Image (cartoon, rainbow, N blue to C red; front, side, top):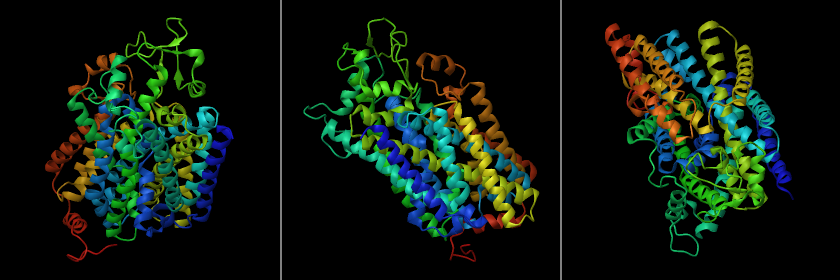
Length: 576
């Protein structure tokens, strides 16, 4: 059976599964729509959280970026994984104990201000819309290759699927759909990795295969990779930094605290019955996440090695263009892979020198999807990877869109403008807001500003500079008042956005020379996608200064902070 047919069958089966779950778990109340009724089992919630958090950036783009950035790409692994631990330990249990539906609702009540709630909603929308663009890019890339449709058509199909199960089911439908999507994406990610690791090293465990010797030789895989990239003029794979140590630190911290401030992940912890269940589901989610995140470096290294050895079998022995393999031709038709014969010799020359390099475009987002084709794995494996990439993108897109619709319907309409709205009308408003958000996401996703992971990194920076400090201070400081919180959020996100657009950081540039030109104008050499860490420092500082100038919050608010922090059973505090 040909690849296209197999892909349609596997992807179609998964889509039918998602739609069936959505119909089965249709939300009938606002509690179902916002927090899945509040009764999700911790293990199930951990699996859904993992799917919600592991987006197209994790599945499709992260390994692609590591494949080309090498050691410098470790910022994504360290930042995103460390950030989840930070979220699980410092924020999730306390927010669950507070017992509300959304992040803006917590901020509005903790800072006793509708103005603070509105600012939090605006920050949430900016973050979530930026993030969802990356998911739409992932959907378009996967569809355009494996279903042989245009990027735009792929987006439309993806939007339709999300519309059906997110608008119908709300958080209840999304939760159970994400459990299925996690199963799909994790099998899709690990099975090809096992095949390729066996082929290259004879070791069936990819995490160990990355540090093992190549089959039939005494050469370690990473040593071989360093050799082939340096022969083409690139820096060593295992030692190349992302610009500088300071920039890597800032990038890692931006991703880390940005993760802890992501509203669509935080609301997942409101879906479990008790506070201890929030802690338990956080632990399970970390286990499920670790399976993919420990596999990603192996996928990245092996994909880069396979790509180079296909195009440059030996140093100076360039592949004849007319003899290029089928996978090369297939990805060329998508426009995501492009060759230009600069010296008219009919051969493909790959080089770090941009004037000589004839592989003028290798979209980083294709590496995970193309890897099984390059390795000549069976069609069902290739089709499974396509289904996994779509599952990762759609699961996170649904969570983000729910966060946006909840912010609009629950925090703005009910929380501020129409407090006495009935539940039926609020549920309708939520669904309308979701539909509008899906349309906006598709429109912006049609012309994405970056690679999936680059766009997502920007979203993490915005979360780091706006919501994370407000949440941290709201839980661990009794003294921060509403004026300080509002000023801090506005200052943090404004400075970050201005820096991004001033230095065109919305583009995750590939050209080393262009990076050098831009770096001259960067603050301490920190690239814009990493500036969220600086924005967070500004947020904390402004909030502290303004609070000092305007006085402490009311006594009842200070008591609320004490209540949130004291474990249930120790004092009068009990789980909601």
